[in-house]
Amino acid sequence: CSYALGLLYLTRNDGSLFQLLYEPFDVSFEKNWVVSGKEDYNGIWKHSQSDGHEDYGLLVSEKAKKYAIVKDLDEPVNIKDRTLVFQYETRFQNGLECGGAYLKYLRPQDAGWTPREFDNESPYSIMFGPDKCGSTNKVHFILKHKSPKTGVFVEHHLKNPPSVPYDKFTHVYTASLKPDNELTILIDGEGKKKANFLSADDFEPPLIPPKTIPDPDDKKPEDWDERAKIPDPDAVKPDDWDENAPEEIEDEEAVKPEGWLDDEPEEIDDPDATKPADWDDEEDGEWEAPKIDNPKCEEAPGCCEWKRPMKKNPAYKGKWHAPLIDNPNYKGIWKPRQIPNPDYFELDKPDFEPIASIGIEIWTMQDGILFDNILIAVDEKVAESYREKMWKPKYEAEQSKQKAEEAVSGFSDALASFQKKVFDVLYKVADIPVFAPYRSKIIGVIEKGEKQPNLTIGIMVAIVVVLATVIFRILFGRKKPAAPPKTTSRAKRAKATKNGGVGSTTEKKEENEKENAAALRQRSRRET
Image 1 (cartoon, rainbow, N blue to C red):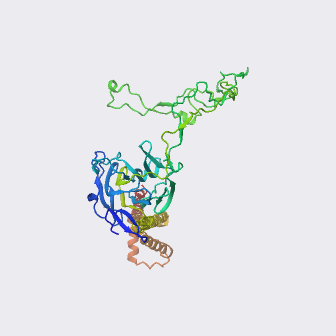
Image 2: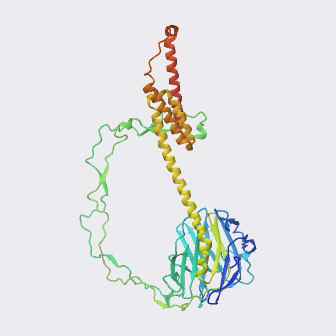
Image 3: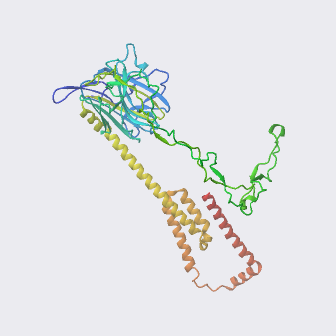
């Protein structure tokens, strides 16, 4: 079938006809949808691709705005005595903390009404879809039903509706209405709620009003006693009951701790504080030094005047009250008498209003809400087919993408943890005294690795080579027999020892100390 917006007529195997309305938002919405001209609805709608897909939808583009947009159908859709399926997709690309993403299926409006007038007062037949804010977390299904007795439209809310999926995937919401008064709510093709339109257990208020109601003119008699218990009028307060005894008394057995400084205050003026040079006594008032804790009190058990602590008074009983007894005049909780409900009526089926328009009228704190694939069908299999072809591939792709991102994130976290452990070990190795002459070079290589984590393996290999070289020199470097020195060399060394041997040794020592100090400064900067 064609995917253009409108009523499509398809023939089933039995030759009967059913209607289908479908909006895929493949092209820009301006031709078929009308944005409300009301001042409050200043949110900008956009024709936009779903994140990660080539598929387009209708996008809520700004935060903390009211939005309203509506589409008149080519002809009203009759809901009575038939199966009817409402279905659409929505995606919270930036999550949803407070906002709605429901659709309103409007009944025919008053004469002269135009789509530019669409707002929250525009009467609807059915409201369906997710809503989340604060304690509210539900997939609404609200039926506005006209009383055959009063002619007044009443909102009937589905009791215990399903919760809104809390993720950033595309989800498809389906409401299936059957001729036997059954309602089924599905999310992603999975049944979440079944209800009966005529059951008082499923809708609040129920579609069928109660047969009787409390008489609004009935009044409680003045002598009606609703007290189940009363104070015993014959009870007498015991003679030894002291109502004036305090709840707490001083502990007479308490002893002041030794070393308690009664004459020392807990706080003293800061002796190091000075009056600011720009302090003006006339404008700022008399300057007072800030207070600090009295240092004498830090080691003492306490300061200031010692007082005995309080303890619970064993003689305390509180105010005396007479014990309660059964009230001989108790008549129970008064209720007005029941009278026949003048607005009562019976129904075999709900009197659904036809649907003339589809509208989205929401207020949301989040942007990035995307609507797509709005469908009205008279066959559940048609809705199922659209879920399989249009929704499921997107949903599975989004799940696969998230799993891949989580796997990469998990690997990155594991690698970072491994790198930290490796570098910590290498720093400890660099602190070993035997490696002191090479410490600055080792730490320099480690810090380079920290700045470029992708070089971790190469850094490890380089440091292992350095350490192995150092260890090799320590173990085998001194075992070679020294070559016999030439006379001229011995003379030169003797001269050097005589003239500046001590100075040369001192210079070498200072050079090593400078290298170690530089290495320490490099590590300090890293740890900071």
